[in-house]
Image (cartoon, rainbow, N blue to C red):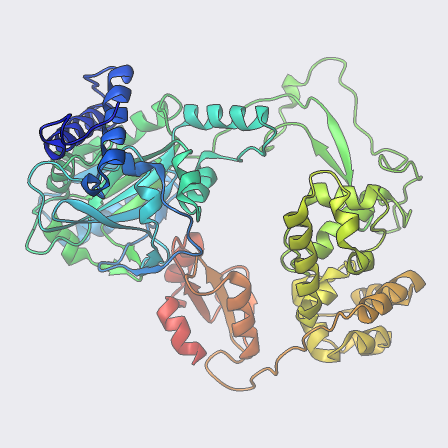
Amino acid sequence: MRYSPQGMENPAARAEELRAQLRDASHRYYVLDAPTVSDAEYDRLFRELEQLEADHPDLITPDSPTRRVGAAPSEKFAKVTHRRQMMSLANAMTEDEFLEFDARVHRLFGDEPLRYVVEPKLDGLAVTLRYENGRLVQGATRGDGLTGEDVTANLRTIKMVPLQLGGRPPAVFEARGEVFINKRDFVRMNEEREKAGEPTFVNPRNCAAGSLRQLDPRITAQRPLSIFFYEVGETPGLTFATHWEKLALLRELGLRTNPENALCESLPEVKEKYRRMLAMRHELPYEIDGSVVKVDSEDQRRRLGAVSRTPRWAIAYKFPAEEEATTVEDIFVSVGRTGALTPVAALPEIVRVILESRPAGSRPWEMPKQSPACGTPVVREAGEAITRCPNPTCPAKSVSRLRHFASRLAMDIEGLGVETSIQLTETGLVKTPADLYRLTYDQLVGLDRFADLSARNLLAAIEASKKRPLRHVIYALGIRMVGEATAVALARRFGSLEALMNASVEDLQSVRDVGPEVAQQIHDFLALPGQREMIRQFLAAGVSPEPEPAVAAAGPLAGKSVVLTGTLAQYSREAAKAEIERRGGRVSGSVSRKTDLVVAGGDAGSKLKKAQELGVRVVDEDGFRELLK
């Protein structure tokens, strides 16, 4: 079918008519769940519009249903500064914690009427969409709450996202929602990927987040993403008395809200709604992990205000952890890079052992006497709880050691995953990590699943690893008892691999947090001829670690214990940690009364809450940047 001015009296009018019909059909299908046309009829109208726009490109509009297929790939996401901050929620893990929240709210308002809106807490990714004159012009992730990433092209591919608002939209309207994947769609997608030989996704939340952050929108368009809208952002000239009014306006404009939302007039109603949602959580088509309880009155919200990036007028009332009885079907043993044998049970997370339900005839499990990877008799040193394989050429140790060497906190060699590590080890191309630096293009393209581009990319990543910081190289060696923090301390104290190799046990003990046992482990490891030869090969291949920068003896972070929580927009966790340590601070993994500072990024959780309870100083990313200055 072709359209021409002669064959059609008014192509522009027909195109607009088709767009209106398709928008209405999509709204009824995806938002109202009340379809009025068959799939075949929808496809016929869609193909007619596609052909019409192909014949008359000047008729194509940004909000046409045909524009959802995905634009050209982007090199990276642009940053979007949120005009109104996107907050994260504090959590109530128990009923007592939720009642404390309710009591705090009531203390401020006394006898004032107080209503709550209760919504399912979806496990997805928060986004904000900006419409101008009813047309979608920008969409962004929450990011750190102040700055997100521009994912407009990806959001356009989601069928539930209207490209043109219905009703009578304001000149500027910002809607906020949660992108997620329905459980059934997730299972179906993983089944299709498994049949195609592609890796499957771990859970719907990670899949939704990864899909929305694809640089190629055409990939996003292939993923079954859904969305519910739950809040209004910037709306100049428009005010609301209640949150319930905002939800009504979202629906009026064609933006899908959750049908499980409820307006509750009293605390008992809130608790009952929570219990009902807990009971039906597995019947819902999507994953939820609790209820979000919000004060309904906008005036009361303003008076309650917020703490840092957490509103005082809302809380995530989380469901209790699930427990289920199961049977241990099997126990297998993995061998790590240090030869440690780790038994792994084939079952979900263990909460407790139900002895009374143990099947008759069950027999105690015992650690194997030989390594399951190489058959070498295993040993357990006096005073240790870990059983190890002593064979230095054990293939399982070689693969694990290679994976550790290439990991993000070590040499950070992108593309050197499990399958590639196994291939390189089994083919004999890599016996020790030093062999990586002798790999050639011809060797790699001779392996299964290695094409020209993947071979060149891996070689480039290996080459780039030659300039990693000294702390990364020390950590990459895989010395027992040497974690990231100890590697940093060793790098600062000795400054080079050569100096570290020549250090005595006494020299090593002089390093902060290195006791006699750890010092002996490091010394014995570096005294092994094989390890010394491997390090010499590193250096001969051009590995020249960057020295540790000087540590500031004074400044706002010097000598301070700092905890990082949440997601920072401009710093990776490692980069933020390096900045703190460079200024004489020490990064801790948990909040206590000894903590001096907490840096809270987006989606900060229990650590932020504990800091607030203990009165520990908290700064957001902007405050963190100021401290770094």
